[in-house]
Image (cartoon, rainbow, N blue to C red; front, side):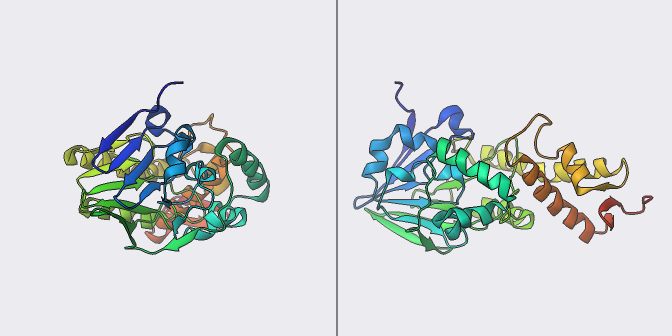
Length: 303
């Protein structure tokens, strides 16, 4: 078995998942103070470093999704901290179901999948934290939670102080762009979060997926700009789709705004519908799109 690659940044160690944490894996962050050791999220790679998880004193989740809970089974009885807006999603599958917002047949299939592939088990003992919560790990090492919603209602950046290393979670700087396809996701909040992110007192940025660790601010700003630009690119693509004529949401979903045509994951149609719906709401509010019954059309176009 190959050793799991990692990199150290003072009190922070990052264990890199497969393909730098590309979904379904992720990157495991471990923070050591003189009094306690915390882990941020628990992706699949956690199962390859089970001894580290067993030695940890607490887990702090930046947000709740199946791929961020894949190692919690290695920490029975250990405190699990979750932003209060994502807390119900951590505590029960019913809460996670409302978090996703998928139809019941999809949820039933998804539960089997995440139990088999992500060691999913709810954590009814999880406790909530609020924006600005601080964990003192000893020796001057602290973790501060900064609420940055959009991806989920409770998505938060976990800032290691005083080093200024920011775990930015699923603001993953990938070419896919922001994901806001679930019931508690918000396009408007994601836009606000992306505008706020450069203002954080950070000297390095760690992503759950894809990029891993970015230490150069200019590079971070370039990656963030490209990541954020995907939102406007999706809007332009949606307007292009509507330029062909009035269409229902179901027709737009079949053309795919987020995923390639061959994508067949359980949640794809649901995520497409949720994402397209939020973009349509913005365009309706701006007066650039009109709705006639079930069909959407460009403002000024023929019905």
